[in-house]
Image (cartoon, rainbow, N blue to C red; front, top):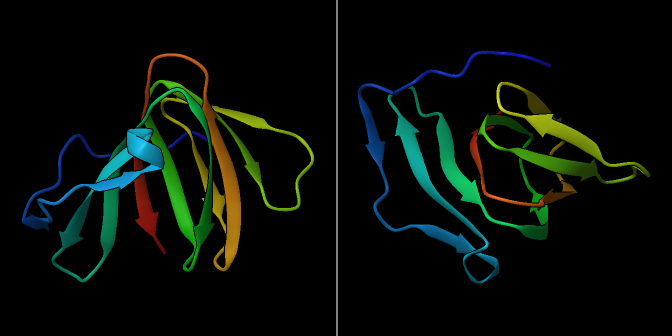
Length: 109
């Protein structure tokens, strides 16, 4: 699923306090858009992590790669920079990075 992600966001507010998960394995900052849309920009360091979702999410990979297994799936799928995956609301997903770090943009739908 290839799609383009903007190189920058204009006219937004950024929450300065970082969202830190799994002892620093995943770190993001919240971006608040003028229309009320909320996004997070973050880094995922090597490891495997499980997240629960309230709202549906779109995860755009900006750099690096990760493997993902959505709730109910048996197999992992790999996502490289320039691709995205969708996560249903009230669900969960596992995400893993093997080396380096992955950069992502999460949009709450």
